Image (cartoon, rainbow, N blue to C red; front, side):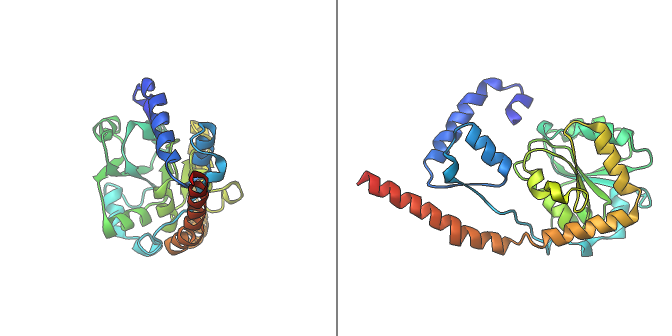
Length: 267
C-alpha cells in the first residue's frame, strides 16, 4: 500500500514475490490483524491454515491516565490549555495520510492539534500547518510520551494502511478516545460492537464523518470520560504476558507440528 504513494508501482510484484519467498520458508506466519491475514490469503502468500492471529498487546502501565499533566497540556496546546486538544503520535511519512488532518483542523475552529513524532514528511507537514494552531514536539520518549498521550482530548488517526496501529492501543490505554479511519488493522482494535463505546471509526476519506465524530468527543466532557474509561478498561485486557503465553503455548506448538509433518514427508 505504501509503494503507490511513492510512485514506485513497478516494485509491487517483486515485493510480493519476496514476501511469498520469505513466508513460505516459515512453518507458521503470525499476523497482527485480520486485514493482513486477508491480504496474505488474497496474494497467495501462504495457505490460510498456516496463518495465525497474534494477539494485540500494549504496556498499560506505561500508558495510563495517571500521566495526565497540566504542564504537558500547556506545551502541546501552545500555551492555550483551555482549548480543545487533538493529538497525533507516530512516524511522519507521506503514506500516513497526514495531510487529511489539515482539512480536519480547518473545520474545527478553536481547537488545537499536537504532532508528536518525526519522519521524512515532517518539514512538509510543518509548512502545511504554518499559521495554524499546531505544535510539533518532535520525538518524545518515556514518561514525556506517556504524558503527551494522557494530556490530550482526542487522538486522530487518518492512516489507511496500518497493519495494527500500536499508537491507537497506547492512546486508548491512556484513557484518550480515538477517532480513526476504518481501515487496515484498526477495526481489530475497535470492532463494530465497540464503536462509539471504546472509540470511534470513520469511513476512509470521509471528511464530514471524521469532523463530526471529533466534534462529538470535543464538545462533551462526559462523553470523553465515559469513552476514555471504557477504552482504558478494554486495553487492560490486552496484556503482553497473555499474548506471549499464547505464542509459547499455542502458536509455537502449531509451528512444531507443521515442521514435523514436513520432516516426515521429506523422509
